[in-house]
Amino acid sequence: MDRNPQKLDQLRVGRSELENHVIDEFLTGHINRREFLRRGSILGLSIPVLSGILAACGNANSSSSASSGGAHTSAGTLKIASTVPAAAVNPITVEDEGGLTMLQQTGEYLVLDNPQTFQVNPVLATSWTPNSDGTEWTFKLRPNVKFHNGKMMTADDVVWTFQQQADPTGKGNALSVFTGLLTPDGVSKVDDSTVKFSLEAATGSFPYLISSDNYNCIIVPKGTNFDTWQQNFIGTGPLKYKSYTAKQGANFVANPHWWNGPVGPTAVEWTFYESQPAQVLALQGGQVDMINDIAYQGAQALFNSPKYKILDNHTSQHRELSMRCDKPPFNDNRVRQAIALTLDRPAIASALFSKYAQIGNDSPFAPIFPSTDKSVPQRVQDIPKAKQLLAAAGHPNGFKATLYTEQYQELPNLAQIVKESASKIGVDITINVSDQNTYYSDWWLTGEMSLVDYGHRGVPNVFLNATLTTKGSWNAAHFSDPTYDKLYAQYAAAVDLDTQRKIAGQIETLLLDQTPIIIPYFFDELSASTPNISGVVTTGMGQMFTGKAYRT
Image 1 (tube, rainbow, N blue to C red):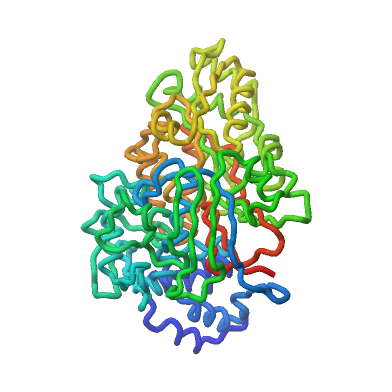
Image 2 (cartoon, one colour; image 1 turned 90 degrees about the vertical axis):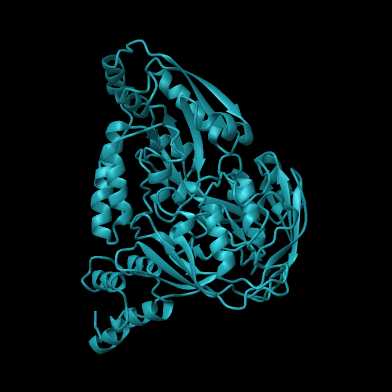
């Protein structure tokens, strides 16, 4: 690279130790351009600074935007099909796909996990900086932002929001992220436009953990009654509440006072459907313009027709089959390994997703994560070895078990594949499929085998912590391993990619040995629309941001 040392020195003035560290990693070739932009955005380096460093290194054109091609008009009324929210739309407790999609219709986050670049981009926060070891993060807030009730957003609202989300005595879904990391006392107001997060443990990727990835954490007015939030949907976003009818749909209208206006659509109407086939028929019949969050299986007609546009994001979302490590027969890791060895992963991914999935290796380290150690051997189907392991564990003739899962997308199909695969080694699995509300309330964390859906995250921290650490709030496997807990803490604290990848390799190897969970694949987040709809941003989490939607 043809560098400009003087310009580089100017850009580095005033940068923190962590910021200069990631700049050094780029200058020495330890990370590439894309990873530099990603890591730099996490640490709060602004777009002008990132662009300036690239230019000073002879690597200009740091960002590009595709032209929409042709004239476009207002989106008018945008009609979208979605799955039915499983429970009340409460920002504290929502945990299902249909419900979380409703949150960002009117609410906004401090930062957005950008689905195209995997960078974190400013939304209600304009900038952020960590201290030298990543235990404190300070966020500057966007000025002149109004809630839908006319109140100006200040640091008081942001502090109060996160104090509720991090309250360990509550039932917040965001505790899956914040337990062991952030307490209510750790969120404080510096001034009216500045908030500081003081963490219980060093975390090099903290902005992701309060971004749109942590989908509950939309900013609401101080004192909001979360139990009745569904009655008004007060937020700061481009859309305002008009009506909401449980199990039927929701209507929103443009917010004329949006800080990032003007708003593209005049209104957005959501219709809830119990099944994907009904959503596909609605799109084909012209009742809706878009389907949010579809599975390839069962919707092939949309993928094979020029009449529809597919929105595709590579993600870390996956399905996780947990096995109770604290109860026989799954308290023996040889039994868990045997079940994992029965699966033909390439065949499963191809059958369920065609080209829209990547093979999993029974750890949360997805192929899209830069820190994933891809040198760890891939687990493959091996029926003879599975039988040997089962016999060595005292089950030469197999055993009976029950697998609990939810009626959602391809999960029942995957459960059937697991059943048929396990039968090859004598394991007789009974499948219990229930609606999402019943599954999450009765079976998710208690069933001896539990098959659940996990949405995308920009970094693996939540998956590693919530589902696998001893005190993890999503630990359906009831897995407890002191070595694993220590490795996770080391990974979370690491700020450079080499260290992260080294620890990731150790975690991946440990999980292959212990096999508390099976992750057969990671798959793309897919949505579908008519060809004339543009400007909608979909995320790996299944969120849909329509504020800048338009028709061509």
